[in-house]
Amino acid sequence: MSSDEMSELLAYCTSRLDWLVETTTALASLESPTPDKAAVDRCGRAVAARMRALGAAVDVLPSDTTGDHLRAVFGSGAGQMLLLGHIDTVWPVGQIERMPIRRDGDRLYGPGVFDMKAGVAIGMLAAAAVTRGQVEPGRRVVMLLTADEERGSAASRQLVEAEARRSDAVCVLEPALPGGALKTRRKGAGEFELVVRGVAAHAGLEPEKGASAISELAAQIGAMDALADPARGVTVNVGMVEGGSRPNVVAEHARAVMDVRVQSAADADRVEAAVRTLRPRDRRTSLVLGGGFSRPPLERTAGVARLYGMAREVAHALGRDLEEGAAGGGSDGNFTAALGVPTLDGLGAVGDGAHALHEHVEVDQLPWRAALVAGLLRRIDAHW
Ligand SMILES: [Zn+2]
Image 1 (tube, rainbow, N blue to C red):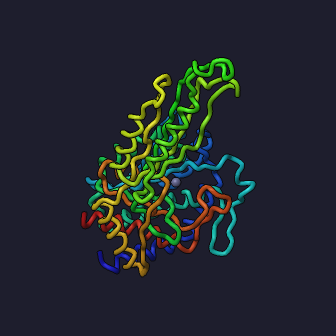
Image 2 (cartoon, rainbow, N blue to C red; image 1 turned 90 degrees about the vertical axis):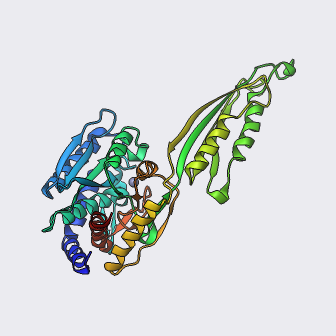
Image 3 (cartoon, helix red, strand yellow; image 1 turned 120 degrees about the vertical axis):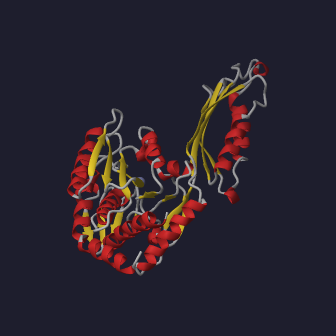
């Protein structure tokens, strides 16, 4: 890719700065909490209209249980590159009263601007920039925007995976790490529930006839904590416990819920196998295990590293450096990476305060991030 081409992309995206700010503002003002289908769909219609205005063919993919998902196609090449994002946010309708959308110097504040309505705007502009030139790319750009990412993507996971399988690479428009770094690793996450059944008895009259579910659970919690391996990035948190009925009754029932994070699929398998083979210490009690891993880890495979290398070259051509790092939380990129499709995450806005009251994006970084995504798409198209 010539540096002329890069500076042309940057000039185009810079000339659309007002559009980027106005689009981010408009989408943030259409609040879209995951559980409120009507609200998410209202925001989705505005996104679809803007993508159509940029020349995309947009399909609304209906969902009964969540807001509708959106699939937009830019260009007409035979192959495919995927831009991935979501239109739902964690903020309830009305949050905007507490967090009004406002510009303070270079910062644009508001609910959902950073996670990830500015990222949606960046992705749209980048896709349009790549496909508006004289030379059509050999691959079409598909932009998939889901409506339930903030609640675990149960309704959209199959859609995300099907689209990823058709794609040579996936660019995820989630917020950047602090300072703008990309995310080349994300932990996988799981939740396990352990229910213990004991034998009730009177604690004063005949305690020997009882088998305490609480004592058994305490031993099992020790076993679960021992699965943690911080040096390998494996963390375990038994974050909820309950059990028993009265102080003078040997507990018949107890329950714990554990959150597990891992950096590799091998560690996910190891932890899962260990949890599934937990056995009661007191044979009079029994264990029932539920749950599992809901997001596989995004591992830094050779494909991920190659995509990051390309993004870094594009950034250099734009006069910027571009670092990489790890994120503790998951995104839909975890699903696409686990399929073996090269995935690069954190390509969206630079800012701070995702899911927090000070959520904001840095306005002067918006154009170059759009040029970065556009340049990366060009580079993937030319060299993958
Ligand atoms: Zn997000």
